Image 1 (cartoon, rainbow, N blue to C red):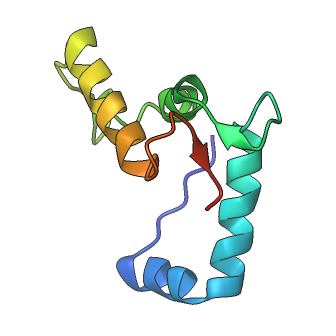
Image 2 (image 1 turned 30 degrees about the vertical axis):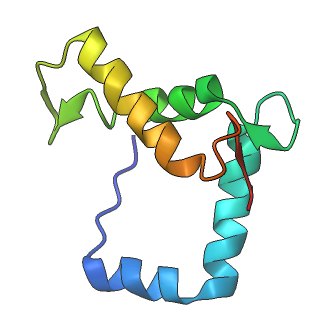
Length: 92
């Protein structure tokens, strides 16, 4: 497993480079879009987060979240990205 440590200034530089940031986000978007319909379903977004175990762990230590709590967190994340509330996340 490869681990990369970056600091806040590295992230800020990347985000401020609009062309690089947009290209990276587009690549990630289409890699998550497993059915290639141009939008991300709730299941596709959840699967992307589950594969990196971001919400299940805190600094590598298991966090005591119940499945119900995790569902609420995943739903909240999805709703944040579904800005037009049409049930999918698109590139816009």
